[in-house]
Image (cartoon, rainbow, N blue to C red; front, side, top):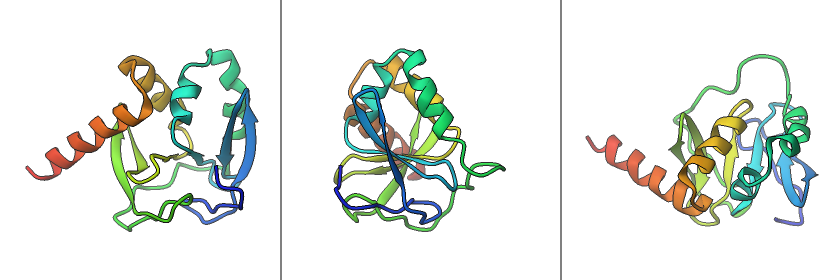
Length: 140
């Protein structure tokens, strides 16, 4: 996790660091988004739902629907590489192929965690498969 403050991918607010069990996550206080560094989605998926309650409570953000997907290129808040939108189960997440971080919009945590649990693999493999599937379907 970078030592400096990082900005939200969607609304550019400074993300707040929070500890959920032994996982440090970056939460957006404005839009309710969540930045997860490499492997953190896998670590969250390994936790029982009762331990994720605190994280869900922090992910309230402002009222209204989550941000609308955009064609605008987003930059990774951790390494400044370009984020790629990939499908992870029923949700589209912003994924960095360089540092393997992901950004979840408000309301996407449970679906993303459940997808990782069902795949039974590390987040890197799950997201790599999702990225390939998204690229293949875009080429058709």
